[in-house]
Image (tube, rainbow, N blue to C red; front, side, top):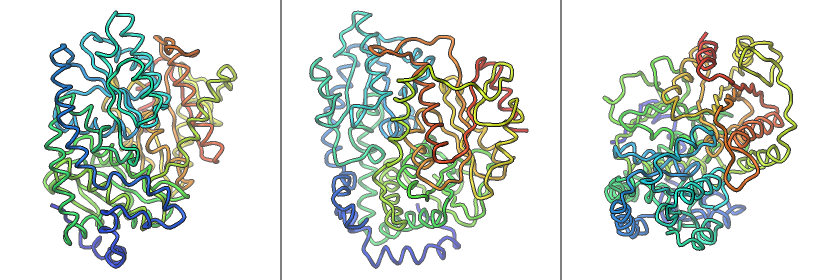
Length: 520
């Protein structure tokens, strides 16, 4: 079921008409790279393998099922996925939807990494990176190799690699007889949900990936009809309408699709947040989540799946998960066409990666904090205590802008704390997004730096009492995490975007203080 509010139908009529006139959907289905202009046609041609990934997906199923049976016979029933961005968010939502356990390690926090290293005798680790050079995932790989070797466990029995052909990860795996699943080089990470990157970890964890593929197949068949073509064009047009000004807001009501919003967030923000424009996805998780009057509301489920009010610009999408994944990929690409942006590149993501490595290389040269308030240190403000620093951020939010909470903490121990975004949004009467660091660097981080200069950023990290060295590297996990915090803050400040950076030295005491300051 796919329905739009009457007001939205009127608002998007010109864009939908343009899509029909230029045959955008049929051309996209056939992989027409000219849609986004001749200047980037050659590059886009290498990015469209996702438009019909289902034949390759079906071919993977027997191999995944055979591997699952093998590891089960070995007593490996704890599946850990090491991956960032699209490589981890799609399997995470697939497994949550299926009700099967998949432990997603996409953090550099020492406590999170340490927790992932427990129970390794029954652990199978899926290491997932298209490039094979993702800093966090490479570090995780070496950490698990060390852990298995220290426990006299055969590395090849406990690690599976998903990567593109020719990557450093493929070479690493082949040298150690580790099984490799190769991705499609013509599919970018955030469009890879229905490829090996989404299917291998999900299938090993016990999700019904054949059903997921069938759901996506039904959606692809529907998209090829006149009715389906209009639906996907309408969703793409609605997102383009939201991004018509500098900053659009996509208010996601999760409905019964728990976790899907996080995947949509990285797909939309990273695809459309560039060239000084963008669409900011936010999660509507309470009655007081602030959404601008011109925000686009999307309910992921039937009308009955949410009791919260939606605005006059709204879409209800009641489709199974596999169908949702393909629908959103198509719609996001169409929104990029209408907004005249390349939905397949991520020009600003590399800046934070480079800054992280620069900070690591000169880690000792940290600046002194602007204030010390008990066990909390702060940078990037004139305030002399936490309450004044938070009050300063609230007072300076651009009336057209947003606040981004970027928290480099142990998310496994702080699950549910994301609702603070809604509380803060009610106070500042502007949209507030929440991202766990460093995972957001591979998703909304593109929008933060490539989108409109309208954001106010609060970075929060904590000093771990249980830091330890990264395997085969000259730094610790805590130093890597702090370098990511400092690196991203540096890039944002270079772009003249305000960043308040807070460092907690007593999490149990400091988190309640911080939450109170944000809510007051």
